[in-house]
Image (tube, rainbow over all chains, first blue to last red; front, side, top):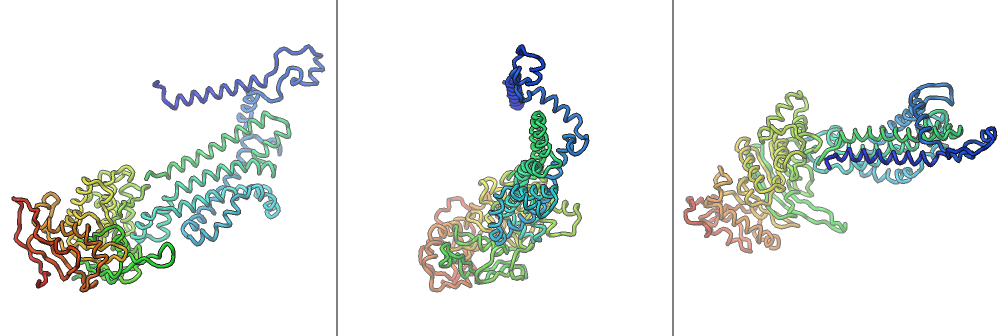
Length: 279
Length: 325
């Protein structure tokens, strides 16, 4: 067949989506024949009982609500009523701050560990113990010491973004080809210039891999962190909508969290592509 | 001799055993000199430490004993005066061919403008006939082209001494041949003092003025220094027609096949490590230096019997170093 692979894959994706939406629609829609009931009573007990309609919203309800959310994303009508764009903006801002701070610490520290076997051996036990700690376990300690819920959330993002970047940078720096370092030595390049012109570009793909893992984890953790600290952010929004029993909005939030996470990952994938080299 | 020469004095390199109990001596008490403008080649089997000698000379490794003086300076680390052409090109894959050379040029001339650096780098890419591929990444270049960029990079810093560590061993025979021609051509122009490691006897015969033979390691040492008795202006195409070709080649092959192992075992009584024997194999006379090793030394330097009729036979070139035998 002459249809290109990409187009075929796209068609198949569309087909899977359509099937899923259709199945969803069928599963939640009730019987059309309304039982002969007293309208007053029927209204009282709700559609679930009278029509067998699921309490779960269908794809059409969700879609309608989604359109509502994204068509006016930036309104602000008080603490518990802000546009979805504002909520997502808060979350992205926290992730960017925490992740940025983590990169600022992890990459230089990773360089140090990667270049010095002594530092590597000395710091390794700390990294091994700190790395598997769930970032949310830091939350009480952060709240107690920092005494600010927003900064605590950023700290939690910082601590969970740190390890993949640190470990990958150290690994990337430690495994730079000996030949390239020898070239730098025979050219009498200064340590700073060697780090900048040889080690950094050589290790960049590995460092970017670490950054991609980190941003993924950060985006996973921010939702949970915001559910805990409350106030603003997409995590708080989800929890708030759950308290409002608005399953439609919960579903929409889930969808948007996924989309934003994908965009964040793709941004770093672009960067990774830019620093990649074929050997 | 002028100041630009290499003097290797009592060099030794020992590595700790994997068990940690003792040390392995790769080579010991190595002495030799390289004159300015000379093309000096080291031939020996794997494990005789020839690459280690080059690394020490480059300043990338340190000797366990002994010193090297290069260009009047004690070698104690890498220097821009000693450029290395690495076995596996060692180009930075994220830089283009031009940028790879520019990296070296800016190291040599940190104060140059961008245009100056670029012009200089382009000049040396043109020297190895790669100016058309300046903007290609190494992954887009063939093995021979990559090695030529490596050569351009080494030459671009205009070093006093050029060090080559089996530069063509990873290339196919045809590419190797054309690169050897280019090195010959370049050498004719620059007259750079060159130190090369190889295990290819033909390569050594084509390029080198002197060939240092090392016995098998561990505990390797200089067996002898063979002077190339082929005329200075040599070309790959007619090298084998010269009368001295087979005596020289037989001598070298014979060394690699049998004598390198025999000499590693048996120490000659009159062997002086500071003055290793100098040999000049020619077609006429078994020209042997002050050296009387056991183990088939005699057979190597005889008048060749494998000269074919019609082969050009030159007048005997007697060695000046021939002893009163």
